[in-house]
Length: 192
Image (cartoon, rainbow, N blue to C red; front, side):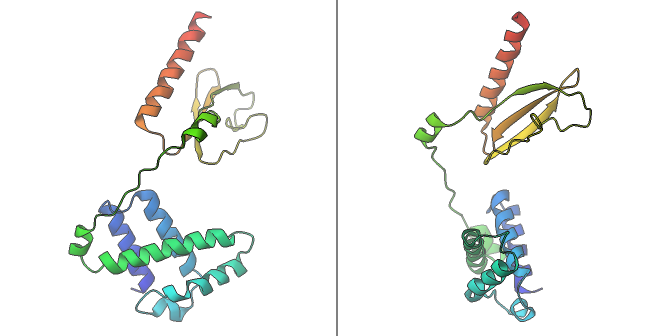
């Protein structure tokens, strides 16, 4: 197994042992896969990962996929690879090292100014579709793309749909609050 394969296995083991969150493991693995895809056979055959050549490998990616990856995003991928290589070097040697590893977890604080000025994170649309194969998340032929939000489509009776946009890091308490609001909307529509 080459050095890239060993690091990929380490990332999977770290995720299974709850050292990396699934999103983190996916991001680290994806960065490693991107960079290893343009590495030479000699670089792949080395005993250790060629971390000193990451700038050169990043330039190759930028040359090959100039329209797809910006310099800033390649820097992000490079930092992810550096992190996974450093973690592999420290904790990937054996099971005992991995078991003794207690990674720091960051709790992100919500920006109160951003929260006050933020647009509503949940939008409910009721629509009747005349075309059965139409994408119900499209409103007037336009599917909204909202960064940081996920959407879910729920089919209702009479060919109606509800589309809910919610943040990817939605907490249980926030989900309960949204559910309460939706129940209130339903109760109001019964009285009208």
